[in-house]
Image 1 (tube, rainbow, N blue to C red):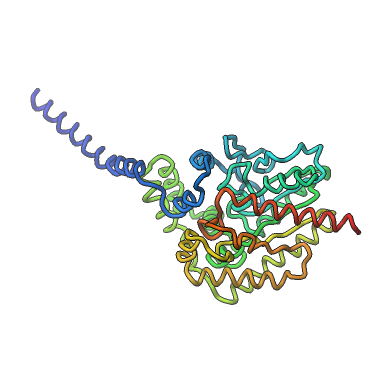
Image 2 (image 1 turned 180 degrees about the horizontal axis):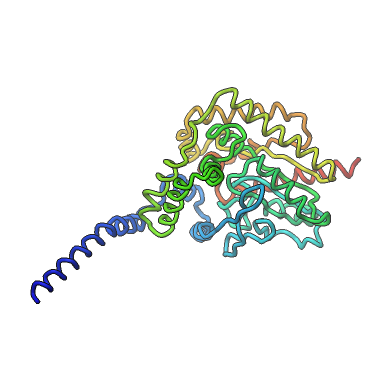
Length: 380
């Protein structure tokens, strides 16, 4: 009897030891995470957002977002409801609370762009798109805006979504004005992944699925599943596994790649201009501000620029210079890349993302361009 008890005790201690070995990293990771302040761009975002009362709520709300698969343009945000971040079921459009009811609107505007138009760095009221609606309404032009900005979209994916929505919606739903807000992803993705390319971690996963590389897909899926349940795996292993599986190619700052990137973006502008003209839609293209176009730099921005490296900075600046040259005579193209110049303080916390307050300045400027374009048509 004593031998049986000793055996059971030994087995129990062994099981407990094994559990502790596996649980120790998770326990430590949770303790460390609880007492570790935000690092990297998250800490810089918090620093330039001082005085923004909704910061913690906003971060919690956008972390709860999910995405849905979409034919042709891959994905869009799923419907979401929270205090600061709301997405509708209308093709993944983010809510714009300043918009008037559609039936009362004289301007129906669709906005396209990447994460800077989606603008998760601000609550619904302060987003760039909502500030366009605010200014338009203030100027006596009742406006309803559908914000179709999606993280990681560049101009090629935006025009695919734009054309798909034109086919899927009825003529009475079509916009009077469409705004394309670009520069960030078209330049940085060209440098990191190659001209016209989507980010490699996403495209390579689709490649694995189509080419049936199931072992790599299984490892990735297992890592993501663990990351959703384990703080240790999420903080220390998830990104490493993803990078190992989907590393992609080294950055390309060659002149050949630069020329291709500029050609792709400017061709997208000219093609879309033709589609808009045929359908009687006013389309405007805006080259957005980046930290590498701003002068002078704030303290935080100087830190960001220093971290980017000369090759990335020079490629991005050269991309902007060539785009400005090629599209200089296009009346639908507007360079607002220096709109934040001279404004005191730091407004960027990375290559192109900004504080919650910047949408007010940029939104007003874009709204005034829309108003001028309307007046130009009406004066003819």
